[in-house]
Image (cartoon, rainbow, N blue to C red; front, top):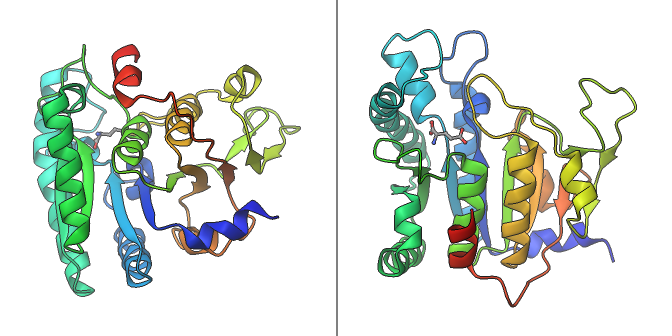
Amino acid sequence: MDKRSLLKDKKRIVVKIGSSSLTHEATGNLNLAKMEKLVRVLTDLKNQGKDVVLVSSGAIAVGRKTLGLNTRPAEKSVKQACAAVGQAKLMMVYEKLFAEYNQIPAQVLLTKYTMLDPVSRRNAENTFDELLKLGVIPIVNENDTVATDEIEFGDNDTLSAIVAALIHADLLILLSDIDGLYTDDPHKNPDAKFIELVEEIDENLARMGKGSASDVGTGGMATKISAARVATDAGADMMIANAENVGIIEEIIKGEPVGTLFLAHKNINFSLLDYLQES
Ligand code: GLU
C-alpha cells in the first residue's frame, strides 16, 4: 500500500518553517505573501479537524532587521537582544494574519531546561494539550533570549522533533529550502538522486545529510536527519519538503509525491529524556 495515502488521516501535525523561508533573501524582510498563505493552509488543516502546531524560526532574523544590523550577529548577547525584539514582532504578524481567519494563535517559548526538568516538561505537555483542546494554534520557538550556549536546542529542526514527541504528534513537516533528501548535495553533484521514502535511518543515510547551513537559519540536512530519528522513534512520520510554495502542505496531506517521507517506527525504548540528556 502507498504509505503516502495514509497521510490524509494524520490527526496531530507539527509544521516547522525556518528563517530563510520566512524572509526575502535579498532584503531580509518578512515574506508576507508566504506567511499569509502558510496561515491560510494551517487554518484549513484545523478546519479539517486536525490539531496544528507551528514551530517558527525567525526571531533573530526579524530582530536583526528591525534593529538595522546588516550581518548575522556573532555575539551571544546581541543575538539574544535580536531575538527579544524579533520574537514579539513575529508574533504580532502571526496574530494579525491568523485573526483574518478567526484563529487564535498562542506563543510557546521553550528551552532545553524546560524539557530536561520532569515537572516543567509535564507542564509544557499539559499546556499544549489544553491549547489544542481549546482550538488554539500554538506557535513555538526556542526561548533564544535566555538560552545559553551550553544548553540550547540551537536549531528548530531538533526543537520541532522534540515538540512532536512531547505532544504525540503523528506527523512532522519540516519546510526547508530544499525539496527533500538527496544522495549527495544536489548543488554540487548533478548525479545526486532524490530520495522519496526512508524506512530506516542508517549510518549510510546519516552520511548523506551534508550541511546546507544558510545565512539566516541554523539547520542543515544533518539536523533534519537527527530530527527524523527523534520524530520517527517517537511514532511520528516526518516529511522534509520545499517551503518555496507552502501549499505543498496540502499536497503532502493529499498523498502527492512531494518531499522525502521518513516513516515512523515507534521504538518502545525511546525516551525523550534520555535523548535530551545525551544530545
Ligand atoms: N530560534 C531561532 C530564531 O527564531 C532560529 C533557530 C533555527 O534557525 O533553527 O531565530
